[in-house]
Image (cartoon, rainbow over all chains, first blue to last red; front, side):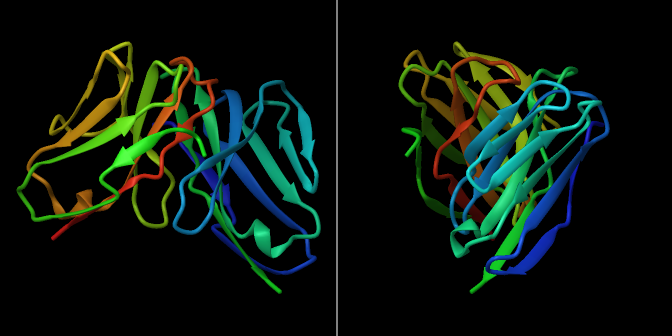
Length: 111
Length: 114
């Protein structure tokens, strides 16, 4: 079946360091969405990318959708302790018309 | 805050029992999706309800069933509970039923099966 994988599974960084998580799908996606889940919380929508090669920025966060619409990345510049949480990508499936969530990358930031 | 509410917050059941979880969608949203999130995993799609009809189902057995009411609130029922059903159950509402729509998640119900 369709799968959306993320790497790395865990990342521990010193505050101020950069962080990147990568999302890879086995099939072409209609769109990619990114969500953040704080420890003990629920996923919260961050952004959506629709076009091939699209890049969007939100302050220190940069999101990219691959040219083939099968992969995506989230890059955080100069991490802060408030960035702690698990970041999930979710790809839109042409087959099921539903979102498939990735496996998530858990970010820990040490002050 | 998304405006999506879920009850109860926590629940402890024993194997073989049945459970009903409830969700109220955000105002204006006619679509509710249910997800199961095991510890350390991403949300897994269970099913979606759109205008009171099931509109898509993930790889979950028939003992997982649901309902959506005219006010678009929804229930998730799980029969014959198994230990592996222990998870966070998330409800998400959206404006439409398509895969491009943002999911607005509720706080979840933490189910423990003993």
